[in-house]
Amino acid sequence: MTEIEKRLFEKNGKQREGYEQLVERKLRRKYSPGQELSVLRKRDTDPEAFAEYYAYAEQCKADAKKEVYGEEEAE
Image (cartoon, rainbow, N blue to C red; front, side):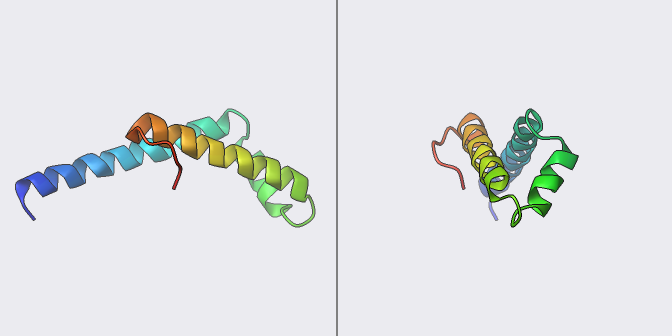
């Protein structure tokens, strides 16, 4: 691996870490860890709550990706 490749890899790793932290912060604006686990556990018994959570989580990911990477679409 060249020195340039090493630096790019390090930068991407830091960006990925920043992206993950930003997604987490955005999710916590609406859902505490306990609330999130509750919704996930009730996925089959309360599909409407899960659908709302999932849509919110995907929006958090898209927003974070745009902020960190300057891209429009989430992974």
